[in-house]
Length: 214
Ligand code: AMP
Ligand code: MG
Image (cartoon, rainbow, N blue to C red; front, side):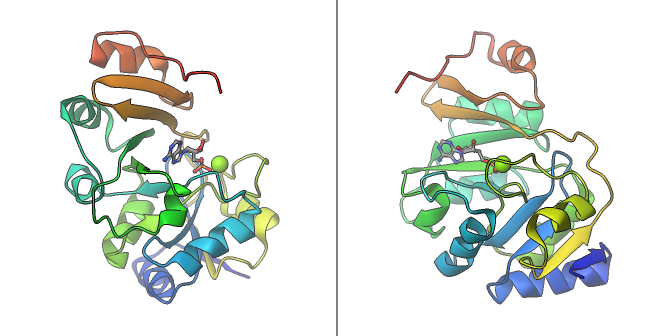
């Protein structure tokens, strides 16, 4: 049984498993994530394989906050404003990858952008702190299925494919993050999730652009 109660000790074992290239499921305030060392392309490939996720669909990288985001991506004033308003919280930002960013290309599905989010959940944050590595973590479900909001739900989806499933109880929000693409001062709504569009528009002081067709 890969499910273990999230404690300081089990979180530290999960961090060691990630460093060894294993994949680990953990709770966030939105849904459970399936994490891998984002620097290790073969660990990231295991996440895609476990989820049967097409390799053209990039992953989100959870971070502790602005400072870590700036080490992987170009952060402009628009991004900073959104981060100040909504992090930690259910908002993912697709930003230009910084030149020399060491995160595996597979995480970004070969794009020159990277999706970052700071989760507001003590177990997710403790795991990021313990791992001292960037972690790539999409939702812990098989591709095309509903995102899991309990550890048992993750196990029903993925069995013992994850080395560990950290059980932090049910997710408070239970719905994915809202995803925005940022290109200069242009902000595009890529996926509507927990964070309402109106809240974002209030902070930006303008309407969000919809993705271009095709
Ligand atoms: P999941 O982590 O499974 O909730 O899915 C991540 C979501 O973020 C998907 O809708 C991806 O298409 C989107 N996403 C992640 N990275 C990027 C990126 N670089 N460009 C555009 N969308 C992205
Ligand atoms: Mg998902």
